[in-house]
Image (cartoon, rainbow, N blue to C red; front, side, top):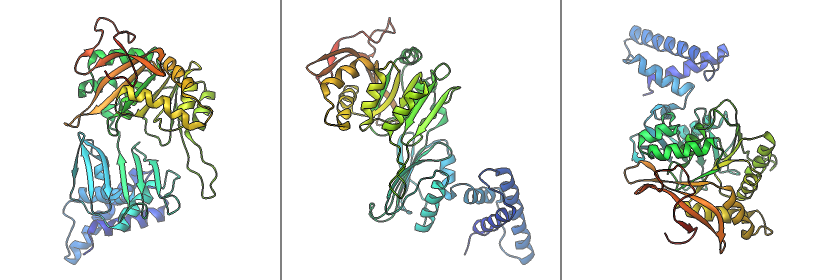
Length: 400
């Protein structure tokens, strides 16, 4: 038996199409039409003695989600407690709340899943097909979408939606959440507003992008910020913020815009701060060169510790070509980066700042010498001073 909401949704689509109304841009008109069709359905059901819709409000929500939202996933996207949604095919759907994952009792069909993905990609200008089996895109609410399809994936499609919660977009909010201490918050805010360059490191799901966004929020009122990302994720808001995004190649193999190209273009846009959402390839070279021109920067990088993050940033530029030498990169990086903040996700699911280190500017035996600024178990290394140039030095790659 076909669900009443499905029948009503089809009638709503027909009316909106006939009236030339786009439910994405005119939600009020879509709601008015939906409510009218739900009541019309009940009037006809009452006259015929058929089953009526008991909860009209719930039916209106379901129909609007099917017509202008993302169907059965819309309620998950609207839930402020859900951080991430992923589908291992249409019958295995999981969510993460508070850093902990759980499987939910929701089932789709293959056709429904594909229809949802197509709807999500419709406004992004990106595609996923046999020739391009992976895609990254941003949803209208800022969530990041990643899709992988068969035959790269065994069985059905794999879909990940990573949400960025509005309540955690400032350093003060992260302090209340337990991610860092108030003292460290003040030190990092001062560093950002003073034009220092900060790298945020951590493993996957450690909260790097959220933390970087909070850092940017602390200085967005006084700096012109240019962000560079493969897919829009940073929700940087301020009076003078420009966000740039890479682009896939077309079907003809042309038109691709890489992060390296975007970094170079960003430097022509008079940035007070250049931000690379995630450094993981040869764009590391362009970032280091940009920082050495005197432009403050910020970025994230996958690493297991703050020291390993610096080590990785001295290696990634080597991917740019054979003529790049680590003996050039290490001193340039040591003089350009002021702080490295390492984030972790604990067993309880909470993301926290685990350590902060500061390069001293010295390089010994090819290794960048750093000082400890903060370790979670110890707190600030110099409680009487906000300076991050104090503490016992050690070299990146050395045992602590």
